[in-house]
Image (cartoon, rainbow, N blue to C red; front, side, top):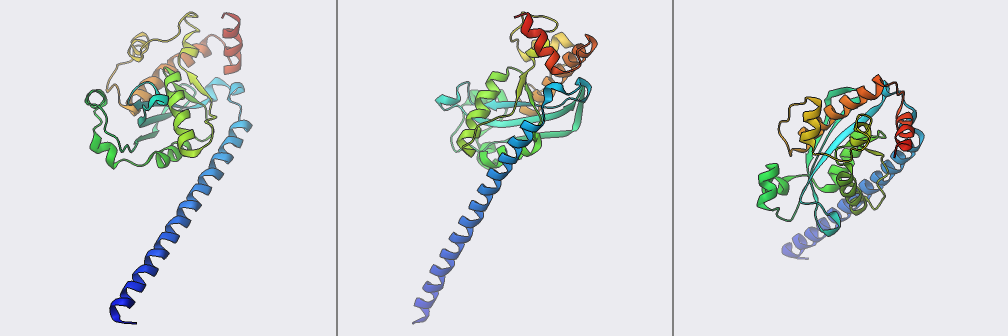
Length: 244
């Protein structure tokens, strides 16, 4: 075997080894993700938040920035922000924020609204990495969102597309507790909800900052629920079910 042939031979062997090692690590990571999600789903079933005293209730308040309103028509998540709470207290040190990689350009309107540009998304972590990191942050805790139907539809689609499993976390809309003060309320803009609670609105349409605003709204109405004598979410659900 000549020198040039020998060099070519080792290059081929090296390429095959690199390919196999990468495939193995990727497969291992996928199995680890599946195992993690299954363990998480088991924990969620074992931890029923409905009977937790409101002052001890731990939730993760989150918000998504998306390219539109219709995940089934191709709109996608471009950032996720979240913050933890215990009772009415915001845990300021426990936050999550990430952009989500996108190979497709976003519109100038979305960039103007969110201050997120195409270069940001091109350099961002992939959806699978962000989603697993988000679940590790959330753990088995229930989620809270303002206009939760929007967040729920996108996170369900993202979870299925990336992990091929159903999204099973409980998501509670802020309007759930807001109905204690106004039974006929359904959905109002976040700015209006903040105004009603005396919360200053800053940095709108940034996922983490919107999550923080939502957390303040949730804390305000959770405090109201406690002042009205409700001990847990189950009691609130039972009351609201009677006045529908």
